[in-house]
Amino acid sequence: MRLELSLVVSAAVACGGAAPSPAPKLAGQLGDVHSQAGERAGYRVIRACTVDPGVANHIGIVGTGSRRLFGGSDVMASLDELAAGWCSGLASCWGRGYGYSCTGKQMATHIYVADWRDVDRAIDRIGATLRDEGLGEEVLISVEPEQHIVPQSAARR
Image (cartoon, rainbow, N blue to C red; front, side, top):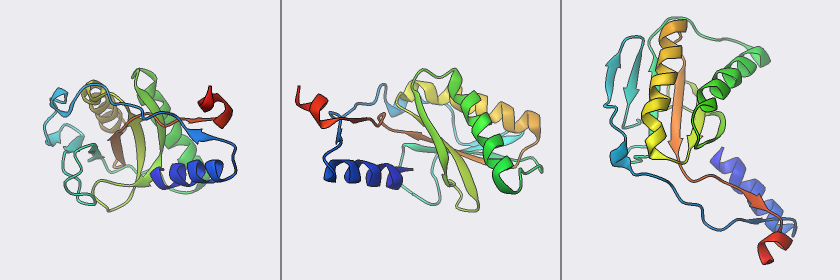
């Protein structure tokens, strides 16, 4: 998602159509996250991802169930519907997508939040779904400022 966003912003700026908005900020701080790494009923929380060690703003949630959502566009629609539900109650959730997982073993659904204070609630919501549905899917929560593209004309005002 980050690479795609960078390409979109770069292409838009190069074409004169849009420019990035002023640097957005995160709300809260890492210390606002109280969920510890470890096993829970039906899922586990990872605070230090294998694929990006030392990156504190990525938190993995791995379902320990045996059910996987396999194959084609139906899976993507199902995962997107789940991610939309997780984001719906989080004021700072500004995006969702798909990409690498925290463990590096499979693809993951990503949700993006701009407030560290929403992370515990996101973990609880995602974990409850993985547990209740018996899923073995992975989800990556990425805490980063909301990304916007604004027309250059608006940016000059």
